[in-house]
Structures are given as structure tokens and as C-alpha cells.
Length: 454
Image (cartoon, rainbow, N blue to C red; front, side):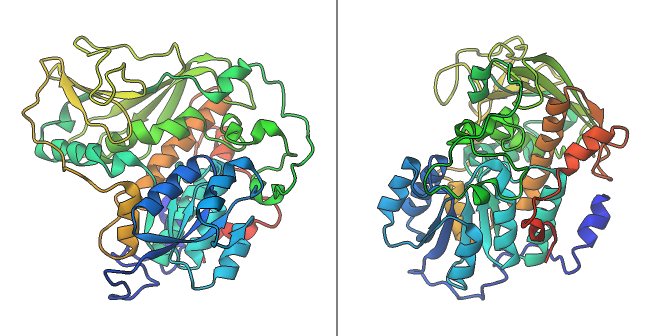
């Protein structure tokens, strides 16, 4: 699957405009609000909905969740009692017709893709929790559909809307961080994760359980590989399983790698290696591992490895001068965090999300220009972009290549081995198993329509 030919195949693909294709200039007035439909309304989705609503820039016009009778959905249903309710996003979008301007997709990782594709094919702007999809094919289809539809897209990512974005971009563009001197990039997450309770001893998928009343399990599974209902998948537990979640890398990689990936122009790696593995099995993510992504030289940037470390005891080797126990945000050890090493002996360290970097090795440098003050959140940035007032900070053309790095790393975790990767062909040329995992399984019957650009 050649990337160039793949995108070329989206016949009428166009560059992302400032205004969504479904709007005309002047469609909004100062008192207008974006009509937002929400797919996923409990747990993290409820936090997102509150942030959208608090902005004052949108009207919640529909709520969709596969488990509307679940306790986790009660707060949203209570807060917006007049909003129509659905258990299947397809029925929701059919019913809303032209009465929605944007859709926020905040479901388990495996089901982001079909909801995003359905909305974009209808010309509706989309916001998505991270990561965007589960496979290279799904990510490329999202990118092609976004370009063809010409709508506003955004992956929710604080690090691409808040202080970290403006500081990082300024430091690289002004040479404060000279990317020609890069020697090492590290990103890490060393806190407890859901699947650690399994102890790496999962021997198979869980046994089927009685389906809870009101749960639309067919819509929950969406186009993924089918498994009978189990509480081991419910309410966030899906993160543990390869078939539904994206592990620690998919959950936290965007919060630690995003600006390094973008402003060091990393693109896609030429290989991935895996080491320090503990608790591996074929069903849930390991207790610990280190992934090393190798990126080819580009422009003034030399070839560089990006090291990802996860697992409670798998903290990175800390360079001399690292301020362990110090964080601008919390005053605690930076986990998750990132380390950027330079050939002049200095390095930068930072935490995750929107937190800023600080320099170490030759002393902290507080005199560098401050980042933009009071930046918009990624929620506000998205809504203002839909209204034609801003451009999204994390559109799919930025977010897709980042998420594809996660797909490559997750394939190595699932196989428990590294492999070479061809960025042009978008596959592992010498590893058939890796190539199949990267492409992803065929969609389940009834969900095939979302795997074409329309």
C-alpha cells in the first residue's frame, strides 16, 4: 500500500481550508454556537463534554453511547436532558440530518475510526480522542477522507494547544533548541496501568458474560474483531486488550512525543526494536518494555532514535544534571516525561500534556522567551476552527503520522520483536506477520462501508 498512490486514490482530495466545506463565509454570527453531537458520553467523554460546554461556544445537540443505562452515562444525560439520545452513531447521524455542525468521538480506541469516517463522509467536522485509529490502513483512510471532505479535524491533545506547543515551536524555529545537534530523544511513562493487575499471566480472552440491560454490544464492538461481552472489557478495561485498546503508548505517547515528532520533523520510522520486556502475552499489553524507533536524517536533523519506556521499574537513564524530583507543574518526578539530548552536552526535560520544557546540564535558563500566554484549549481551538475563526492545532494531517508511529510500536509489542519499516510503502517489507498487524483485520460484516473514501 504505497502512501502516495493511496492518497492519490482519494480522487478529489483537496488541501484543508480554513472554513469547513459545509459552511459558507458569514454562516456564524457573534451569537452563534456550534451544534455539537457527542459519541461517547461517560468517563473521559464526560470530562470532554463538560469542557466543550463550558466554553460557551457550542450547543450539545445529541448524545450517543452504547450503554445509555450505565451509571457512567448518568451525569451527561442529567446535564442535557433535552438532547436526543442514541446508542448507535449511524442512527444518530441519519436522524440529525443537517442539524449538526461537528461530532466529537470519545469512545474506546477501536471504535473511533468508523464514527469519524461516517461523520466526515457527511461533511461534518470531527474531534477525536487519541489515538485516532487502530491500524495503518485506518489512519491513512482517515487522512484521505479528511482531505477529500475538506472539513475541520482535530485530535484532542493538550500538548498541541497549550503552552508546550508555543514554547516548543518557538525554541526550534529560533534555534534555542538546535535540531541539528540532537543526539537522543526519550519519552516515558512509569506509572501503574490497568493491565498490570493481570501480572502478564493472561492465557486467553475472558469467558462470555450476561449482557447488561440496555447495552448495544454490536455497536460497542463496531468494526473490530468480535468478542462476546465481558466485564473485563467494560468501563476503561478495554485499554488492556490489543483488540480494543492501544496500551500505554497509545494512551500517553501523544502527551509526551507530540511536539518532538512534529517540530523535529520525525515522520515515520525506518525500524522499531523492542527490549526490556516483562510480562508479555498475546492478549494484553506487557508489564514493561522499551521501544526504540529509528528515524532517517532529514534536512539539518541527523538520523535519530526515539526511545519509549513504559513500566513502573523502567525509568530512563537520567543524564547528569537531571532535576529528579522537580517539575514545573507538580513538583514531583517527571513521569510521564521526555528528555531531549544535544551534542553540546545540554539537554531539555519536560513532563506531558501542555507543560513546558526547561534546560538542564549547564543550568536552568529562565531568560528564554515565554510561550504564548493564556492559549486556547484544544476544545476551544476546535470549536473556533469549526466557526472559521482559527485553524486547528492538531488536525489529522498532524495527528495521523504521530498515531501511525504508535501503530508501529504496538505491532512490535504484540509480536514481541522488532522489524524494519518502509515509510513509502507503509508496511514491514520483510515481516509478513508485522505487515498484517499494521494493515489491521478486515472489518466485521456490516461495517465495511467505512473502509472506502467517499
